[in-house]
Length: 109
Length: 112
Image: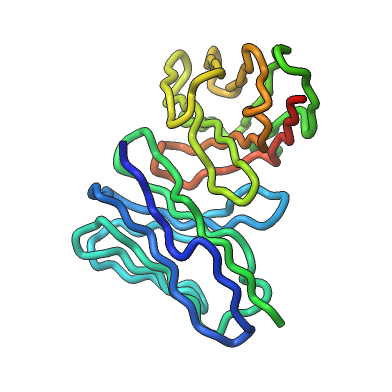
């Protein structure tokens, strides 16, 4: 069974700091999605990466797909309190798409 | 445009009771799925469907049944509720399994 491990599990940082969270698997992804979930709500899609080595930017967020398509990272530059939430990756290898274990980020003002 | 509608929003059950969580979408999505989210955790896939009449098990299917008689509806049935099923349940849909998921607002279920 494919397992998506995310690290770190928890992260608490000061406003303005940079951070990177990771999503890793032992299996190759055909594509990978990143979602953010805020308390009391369902996750919202941030980005989908498809090609090995691909880099996508969404304002202060930079997403990278590993060359071997077995890992991905999300880098946030100059984090803001509005970035607080649960960050989830989701694999798209087969129809049994699963979510990663999640990284809970708290950005302190 | 309602999107994905989940009902009820809150539910309290006694151990052994059964119930159905409703999920409906009006976007003509083929892919629908159910997840449970335990406190502080990610989402675990319970069951999913790639179209009317087709369902399959996810990561944690035990204790749950689903059916997909129409494109719009994908109810989740708890056969005999157990305290371990206390969780927040989310329904989601998309055009295809790897496409953008649209989520319902969630159901907070407590089993006493």
